[in-house]
Amino acid sequence: MDTKNTVRVRFAPSPTGHLHVGGARTALFNWLFARHHGGTFILRIEDTDTGRSTEEYIEAIVEGMRWLKLDWDEGPYRQTDRFDIYRNYVERLLLEGKAYRCYCSPEELEQRRQEALAQGKPPKYDGRCRNLAEPIPDKPCAVRFKMPQEGATIVNDLIKGPIEFENNVLEDLIILRSDGAPTYNFVVVVDDIDMKITHIIRGDDHINNTPKQIHIYKAFGWEPPQFAHLPMILGADKARLSKRHGATSVMAYKDMGYLPDALVNYLVRLGWSCGDQEVFTREELIQYFSMENVGKSAAVFNPEKLLWLNSQYIMKEEARGLAETAIPFLIKEGIISEGRHIDMEWLSKAVNTLKERSRTLVELVSSLKYYILEYVEIDPKAKDKFLKPENLKYLSELNVILSGLSDFTAAELEKVFHAFADEREIKLGAIAQPVRVAVTGGTASPGLFEVLEIVGKDKVIKRLSKVIGG
Ligand code: GLU
Image (tube, rainbow, N blue to C red; front, side, top):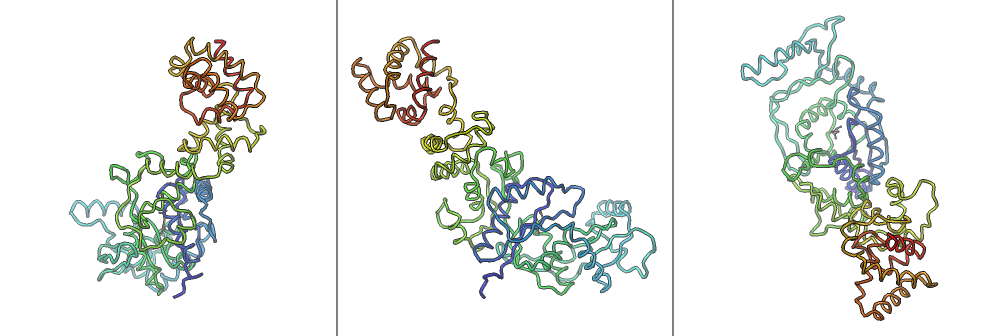
């Protein structure tokens, strides 16, 4: 079958929190599957739980998706806009005798649940209202789905293979609450059919919902889509990834200076592989992605590996683009003020010297400080070691020479420094390291002469004068 334009998948987050790493990976696998097959990727906000869903989280999810560049073709649809559609389908099941009104109050249900537990029985709804002859007028009621109790249901999962569920463990689930709100397992089926979803790719925390949903498809006479349940993401201690393990929200990674492509590359490898390759362009991911290469076992989140990948992406990113991405960080750190003009060509040169030594944008920006600010803070240990009186004597002499230079390029500076050291019969390091400390504030930096050229004569002289003077 030609799958072009026929594949339709969706990412269906509940807006009860920020977009987290697990959700983003689900979104990414759906997006890649759609893009690989030339299909359609839909964003659907599952906000039926009006008590826990917020506008702020919807925005945060959309923002996270945009940052990761996971563009969608349809939506965002919102389930709260579709309540009429769901109620119509509830009516249909009621009319066909496939659902029934349940008048049991929450207190009664709780009491029976406790009794069942006390007797060692499964605390499943006892079906009391299943066969009521007549509706009870004016009494609040929920609507329950008549779950088949005989036999078994097989979920043919594209990742996990066939999984069998005994039907008698399933209870008659509530599809419409007494307050008129339809419930997750019902609306998800209605939407997936209505939106012509062909493949449901989601976390395997939903696997136990799947047989229930399959029964609802069958009750309507619909063919269920194909299912692919992604194994969970775990922390290093093998517990499900949570805040305890560090940042889990996608936007927290943005703030920590990660690049979206690096995070995408990291997330895809949490469960999918393609030989030994670790670093992929988006085009490669789209080309190679297939469900066959998604692993069956849970993946462990490894922050060091993500950091390593990020450093790889920073290294190969173009300096100009990185410089632009760095601007908000520079503003946030107070290194430049908002609206201040900054020469982007100059900044790109500075960024270029730091690309290979910065694992995150935060690290990059922290080093950019010594290019941009007038003066730098000097690390006290470096000061004690390299700015002793005998070093300062040389620095004063050197400063006079530098002040007279009209050519302040790296090549010229290198010559000047060498001549200075030769004349005094000292090692180059005896002046290079003190200058580095005075100009950058620390003992590690890119090549000194390049740094001096980019920092520029004015600031170099000012900083040297400051350490010499006090
Ligand atoms: N709204 C569900 C969740 O956020 C996803 C449901 C689904 O993908 O079927 O977990």
